[in-house]
Length: 344
Image (cartoon, rainbow, N blue to C red; front, side, top):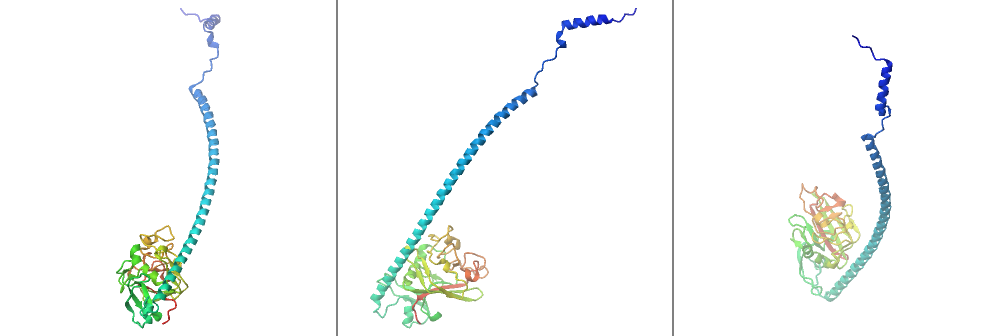
């Protein structure tokens, strides 16, 4: 037996009963925030806080930059003032050294004149090779200068050149064999070293004493090709030890090209253990000698002796920049002095 389908009235009754039993079905669901929305809201708040902190830091950084600029300007002004004061002090010190040196030279000349006055009546008075020449000693070689009791000078063995340019020269330095090292200390350069017939330095104290009268300097050089050159200076003075054996030169003449010793004029003597140069570098250690280093050299006549084959590779050799440049070490060098008023 077939069942009859439900009528429309029956369905309407069922719908009404369901609505009465569950009225919430027809209400709109409440809007709830998803976790992503909650996270986005919190992130916005953090961004606002970070922006506020960045603004504060930017303001603080701006103030610090302004303060740094003010402090930097102040430091620069202080440094400029210190440099100005340093230059003034350096200028005063240079003036004082110059006056002190001049005073010492005047005292030395007065002592020499007094000594000559005391001994000039003696027919045996001998001061240097020029004195021997005037007494008819005309052969070049080794001589002994007698002691000078008035000046307190000991007996001194010297090598006299009685031939070059009229003779009468007292040799104060020679480089020809390379058997003697010239990388010596202050005391050795003061007293002298080497062989009087070979390579030697006469000694700053002796050179100072011999140059207290008006003196002329001659520098003779030979290269490894056999060429000979010379340089002469109309005036030569070596200060005393208190003045660090400072070098003073007059006018240059010669055939060696550019004058490479004038750069060292009015400079103190330096050795590996006593740095008196005008440079931050220790020139005596760099150039391996004792010399009147400025900053550092135009010549280095007391440098390392390099033989043929090694003579054009080093900056610390026996150099004369005005002839062969800074890396050519010469074969032979002699430095010699005689009085300015000497007449053959």
